[in-house]
Length: 323
Image 1 (cartoon, rainbow, N blue to C red):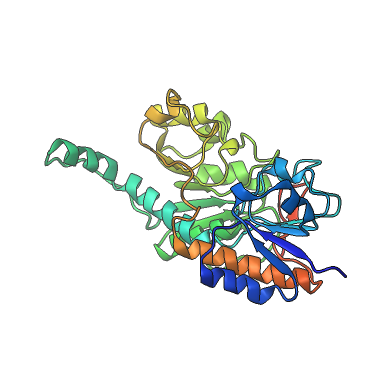
Image 2 (cartoon, rainbow, N blue to C red; image 1 turned 60 degrees about the horizontal axis):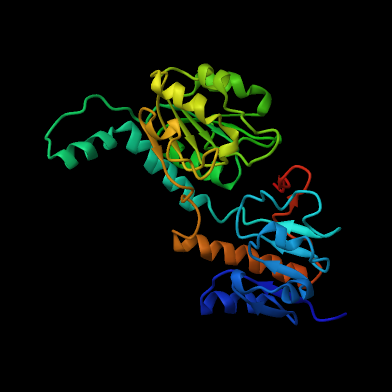
């Protein structure tokens, strides 16, 4: 068997490169930044660790495995992008810490009126901005219980919230959830929630899941968080739900469209916090360490002919159920 060639496009430090090298066995690792990857290098590679643009992969007929550094696999699951038989794996498990903490910070920012106090400070005003809300004893609904959803649910439970989860597959209910349902109970669960956190991938099934009917079904005064995919939310419907006062506030790290155009109504919606898809990424160094750990584990499995972890179902568009 020829020596496998593994193309690594992640920006790594020396220790991280050593970690991958230690898992590579006899495989040849080529550390090349994405912008410097030539067709010659790509077409000769047996595997890629990193997120090259999907369109670059269409001619790489030799690829047998692609390890993404993202949890989302948008674009890579489209027909014709990957060679027949190639396995796609993602970095699910790397982002739960960073994104769940981002979600907690944004929710408390909204609940405690911190935005209005920032306005006070900018205007040098000593002014009471009135009542606030609490996570304690609030009913939280987490839609999507992958790594990110689970980590957020654990933190909300620890803060005293009553947490309900919705996931695709039946599974034993963990202790940090008060109830666990499948998607057929989505609308019923919306009606009971003070906080709705969407942690969903971008698929045909999740597109515009949060439409006008969904926002109308939410409890008056509820808070909405979206860190999954912007395509799951009707942005205009969300803006209207906020401006009418039906929702108390919302935080979105993803939007549809993205980037959000400067003239989009969502920018000026009442009590919204918009961040530009930065809750994950490389902003927290631990996230990169976790990505490398996932990649190193799968690299060892690949070169030793073992089953890979975090395999993405190309038809569904998200990671296969492994628990």
